[in-house]
Image 1 (cartoon, rainbow over the protein chains, first blue to last red):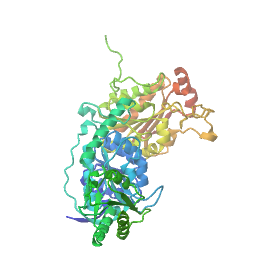
Image 2: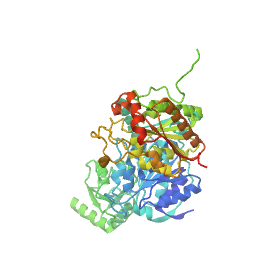
Image 3: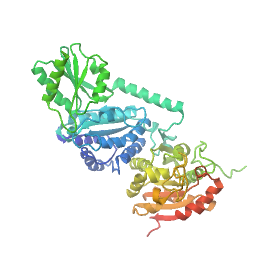
Image 4: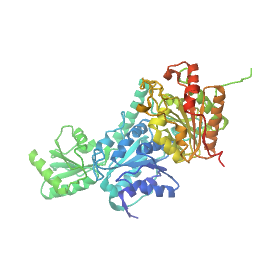
Length: 352
Length: 248
């Protein structure tokens, strides 16, 4: 049965359905509906909710909960994610699974509370110290937010890694009908790593640690992480594409802006400009596959609510095959389909 | 021949990495003996800080987690809340607990988290080479207070027990010292009491232990014990600052 839910609340309920046992968070707009929902729902479900004293404390409570071997989640928005970055680096290094939701707002600095995609770099390119990546899911509807949040818990457990779900403020705040299907969670081997105070029962003690003062030892850990990241790159990239042979331009957008870009693509086709849309669903691993384009496509237009961040990965994926142009609005301004149509016609014209 | 003394089963076979004359070894032994005597070792999780005791997870013979600098009480909160049947303790120095991690310390106490904090106060940053700590005494010279701690410039040293005593949900707070055998025995009794309170579900317990750092202080081990007694104890009075079990 479908129910009408706000994006942030749907993400919260998805975590509960996925078997999230503890939520640790700190208030920040525009994600407050998540800790608010969890403060009642987790307690009613007999699970753990703690409002931490800071984002820094919250991510370290996540580190503790994940170390104890249960499914844990935190949520925040861009400046709060900045504060969590050290903890995320520790989680990645210690191979601890968890889900982190970022409801992006605009920056830099305190910025504003309106929707934005200016924290693509923050979640895709790390931000914490050291050589690490985190899988990043970027849904474009409330239903997909639910499905990808549930998937994020499985991916976190399967690869023993922190996983991001990123939405912009629009998706967090808007209501759409959603359906929750029964979930069969990935079964993680808790005894193999968890420091849950059961050394007596399991017969050996576990350690959760990211320190290694031996150069050779630490390099080995980095190689192990790299092997995991290579597996994730091979198996987990997700995208949608409507680009077909005969199209002259491909628009690229993720999250809610991809829905605006879809309208622009329809309008372009109505005007006789043959266009398709590529929508990365995972931002890391980036879906390079989607950028093996038909020979008819002469130009790519990347549309983001930022000054141009994902375009770097698009250019790497294109590897010089065709030029990539950019159209973006920021500061909380959301582009209209007509703006994208105009920008596309301009670059297609320029290409000719 | 009868064995009259052996290393506590609460410690692993790993040789301690601390400097000669350092108090960490004494306190490690007291905690290890306590965990064995109270029969807690097989369900305990030790949280190591950033600082000299960063390798504590290698030494205590139980589950161990290495936490980010200052965040041990938050990590302990995460573990204890999802595994309430476990015994969780943090082992933290003055820089970790009373500078970068002050917020985590105060809020864990305010929430009445049912954890035990072992706080090593040696008035200096040992691992990084002897810099000014929040607990460095007035006039004490360190590598970043070469003219001695000056109240007008660096303020007064933080008294952690006194500060946490203002928090009603701090169940048990005691300051002890390990500068001589009678005080080591009192410290052991305090540690035991703190863990017993956690077993009984009483909430936040902390033992602050005045400890020596001869290398960081640039004195001999014997002089470091004298420094604790003559310099530290007058500013950091020993005693029980809160004991929920003793109040009726």
